[in-house]
Amino acid sequence: LKSLYLFYYDQLSSTQKAVYEDLYAFLQKPSSMYYLKKPAKTQDFFIAMTAFMYDFPEAYWLQGYRYYSDSQKRVTSITVSIPEDLETKMAQVDAIADNVVAAVANENAYNKLKYFYEWIINWTIYQSNECDQDFTSVFLLKQSVCAGYSRTFQYLCKKAGIKCTYVPGDTDEPHAWNLVELNGKYYWVDVTWGDPIYDDGTQTLNYHYFMTTDEVLFRTHYTLDGTVLLSSTDKIDVFKFPQCTDNSLSYYVQNGAYFPTYDYYAIRNYVLQKLYENPYQEISFQIGDQASFQYAVEELLKNNRYITNIFSEYFPGRYYYNAITKDDAGVITVQIVS
Image (cartoon, rainbow, N blue to C red; front, side, top):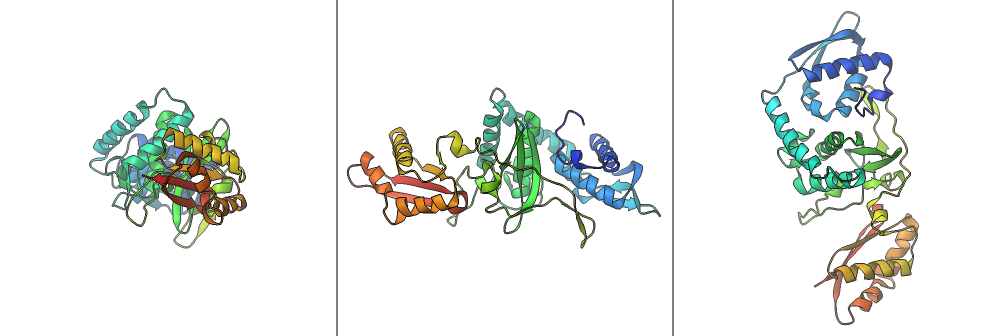
């Protein structure tokens, strides 16, 4: 265990860690029944099991476990229905995952993270199914929901030696995403929201929530869920999460497309540079704070439509363009229509 990145394990008490270590031993040699080396109070057991399931996406088959306790209300053993095809499925998952990781073996950590993010989005359709809470839905069915997306990203990072964990929380509904630690700093990644489904059924990759900060994420991701369920009505707050304040690795900063405030000439130069690269590509840029973003929308797209001045410097004749705003991420996307 010492060589692994175990975000939740590190927050456990010594008693809970002992249960967690028991579960890790069980993971190595699965059987239909497992006796804990040392019985644990139900609360300690539930906390350790939750931490273990969050840290080990490959333990997905443990989700339907049952536990047994003694007269002192200590958990003594668990039973689980092990899928008959578990070994085959894991071999198939690992074959795909290893190929993905090998494709960027010589890249730096940031490029690996970006590749994993893009690979999951391009490989997967957002759609519920019978195993959408685990990574087999992504690797084997190519369709999943947020839990599958985030656990797949976590597993690829794990194989690549990058510190990444699974994070449950709430948007307008229960949701899940990832926390990445790189060079001692923390970043949020929401792969699912990088793969949105639009009203016309199309899905287009975006980087709004790739290596982003608290400031951007918490505009839409309202709470982080560090609780553990003790019963159907009772839960306890256990796990804490670090602050993500470094913006230097956001996609827009990395690509020179981030503007802390509305700066017409800086945006003009960026858009013209992109037009000269490819006049018909989508051109996206991010404005730092929300007030500046709203002002930029008014100036560029609504009141003054200054974006037409910029386009006219490249297209002196007649042209049409589309513009899309992502208000909660502060992103403006414009594109000339051929």
